[in-house]
Length: 300
Picture 1 (tube, helix red, strand yellow):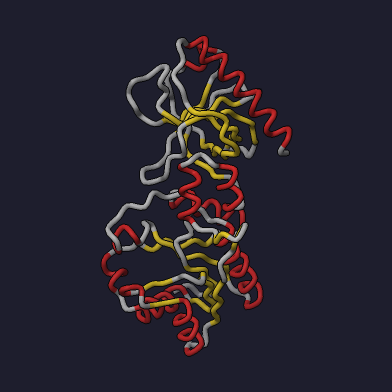
Picture 2: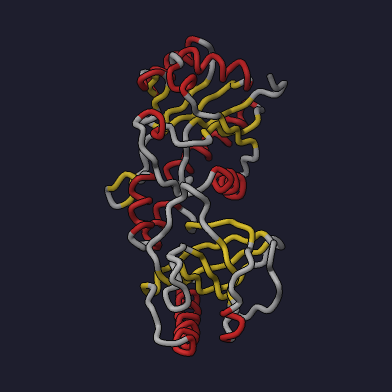
């Protein structure tokens, strides 16, 4: 058990959207009030994979969630619990007792629809009542709505799949993003005069609608660069049908191989298409670059 007590948000927090942000902010507030460490407890895999035996395409990887929670809310203590059969079948009181003892929890923050324990019998209201019995603080955060719609990870996944990235970002409260190590590609972009960096989505993470996006690339030195980012199978130059993420960084010259980078997606520009030649593709990338400049000029 850690010596310092914790104020802890509990949940999966896929995407870390504005509904989750309300939990994070309340957790930081309670931590300051009781001189505790603001913390988050989440799971390494989505519980539905075991509970309902179905794969859930995630908005972010586990590392991506941790990164967003730290950068946007200043919570560096993110605890990942492995969700397995034992955790799924554990009585909810036993689950909470173990968390409180192992993590020295003094305050818990959950969403209105939080449920846990065997058959989901542990609800937010039952948790609050149980915490009162144990002299543990507990806040239940009400749903957050935009345009009379409850913000949810499920809704945001649908928006990303449809390429409605601007609306997805509105619900997220931050740009949808991908972090990865820059990989060596085919170097065709360099030959065409539009060199690109190559990245990929981790297994299990949702792939946005194939096409070209106005984006920003944030490098490991913190510098931000406007980019045109293509998500798709590169039909003009490849028949492999393998999804790749290629970003043409505007006004940048340098070797980024093996460096960490983050792509933030802001606006869908056009669908991916097959061009008759590399020259035609190169000209289109330059037009896309101008569209990206215009987007960010209007949306600074």
